Image (cartoon, rainbow, N blue to C red; front, side, top):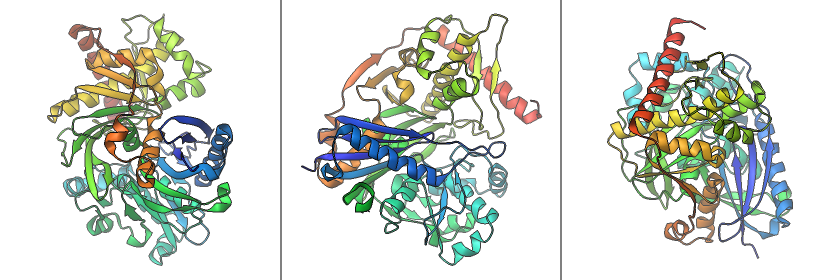
Length: 499
């Protein structure tokens, strides 16, 4: 029977594929890492064809691990790193430049020019987003301006733009489908989240031809078929949703007031605001949480650029550990009074600072500082940044009663307990922390008729562990004040040009 769902989870450092059965249980996983390219200071790129190849390899690995064939796959759901921008040739499907990754800061000066033109209010009102190099629009413009002949070819309709979901869909369908969903569209800074349409004024501001853009669908929709040549049989692609929205969907955050925080490459906290677009006064983002049957649900989001990526740097860059799983035992050996702070501003700081000039720094080193202290400071940086987001949400009038967590770092008990302590909040970890892929499976399964309703999906959420605060106000204040001081010094150093 065709009762399985193939969920493609295309992330920033690896491509993953998971197979779920009709009850939402994980059957298998395939994964392949791919190269990160840093051609200049603050630049981050991926080879888009390597993304495609690693995605297909992961899917085949997952099928083999589950001991099933493509004939047993009912539908495909796609979730993806958002904002990462690809422009390709409509005839060949080949990118005209590397994918410019969401972390990339090369367009910061251009974004400053837009701010100087007093365009931030216009852009935020339409998109819910602040002007920043993080989003796709300035990346697309950079490609058109810097790749020889690109603008002329775009004007002729020879080129296509897409976020990673769109690029994968194009290749899965052999170029027959140029579509995306409302969550990914909402991160381009070209999409009006109120009208749910590409916005002509925004296209004019960024000087981007409308002919580049894909058709925008609901998250659960008929996106096209995966070509039979790829896996052996044609498979409907019935779900697309950006990775952070997918994690919220997998965590069943379907109602206003529900919140999740994902600890993957970055850290992203989403608070569902229902059918209301809540404009933040504290530099958080308003975004589309999901769109089903033409009805949009919104969210407030705080975006942190470095979480798991910080631990990848600790492992691969500094080589302090061989496996990130070693970090928990090291942290458990570290003093509760640790005053070492790592500010992981390797590609600037995200919410609520939005400071592209900041760069990573370590503070509070003493003669007895060693590997375990630095590793622990790296882990805690995700908790401190989450506290930044929570304070901004509360300043906007939002309330979070409990926080559902997921992503690789959510499996670290030390980090989750410290997160609960710092936030003074109940932290809930589900049995399955790979909720990003699960969210993609759920939206695809809704469209394919495997799941009947959001209520049915909500009943599937199961708690693994509950973390409750164990520290007092004085402890929280002392440690968080130290973090704020470290961030302040990092930003002041960047402003003054110090290294």
